[in-house]
Image (cartoon, rainbow, N blue to C red):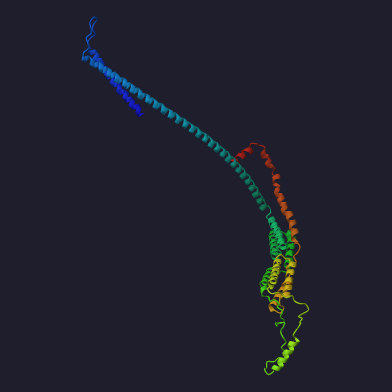
Length: 421
């Protein structure tokens, strides 16, 4: 733009010079004499007349130079404008491509947004439908609970009593827990007593008979038995092994009867000692009818561990009420203690006495095979609660007037869109 302004200023200045030179030339021409007539030879111009002609030529040359320069400047400006226009066109084309790309991206984002909106609308419609179904089910449950609570609260007490009796049976036969079973039966009787119904006297009488039968069952202290067995297992290391001694004296002890402690009787004592030595040089003694199996050195460890293992087996059989396993384990312990350990040791004797007492104690109880109140409660549940549930299921078919509003078809579709909105 600055180059165009400079060229325009130059052209304007060149035009002013040309107009000034043209005016001066006109004045010079007007000042010249008239042209001579024919027949007369024109006089040669003087030096003063030649001066204006040389000035005109100079101005014409200058004008031509100015025109050439102006044309070059104009041509250069035209070239610059063309390059600028080409650059502008290229930039415009690039901008147009970018705009087209942005428009395409905008269309894609708009399309994705539309898809997301459709998905969200579908999900919202699905959630609304699920919410409507859940509300409907909740209303049904509320209506059922209200009908049950308002119709017959006593049925809940019957169901509770039936559940308590079944739990008592499980406790009695699976865990053999007589105390818990008696508590559950008493709670069932209390729930039936709240009804104050004379028609339940047979069931309550059966419950009282079951409670009396369970109270007659002999109670066994299973926890105490397990603790006693564990204590005996800890005392196994204190038992003394039979080392062949008899009443505390070694088997090769010599008979020292008749020997005195007086020095004066040395001859008599020597004679008696010599006779005893010669008579008992080789002696065979018999302890009892059956020889006791003596253990080799360091072999008592295995016997003690086996005894401890049998005591642990007996302790595990107590809560499972496996009386046969319990008896066999204690019999094995008693046999091994009597075979390998000293009978005359007081600690061993106390250990064997404890084992015998535990073996005589039973670990299984004589529990009744069935409860007389259970079939009566089952029959009561079937006659009252099942009938109540059947009566509850009757309202849908009884509600026939609900089919009448279905005649005006527009009423139903109008309600549906309201719930969806």
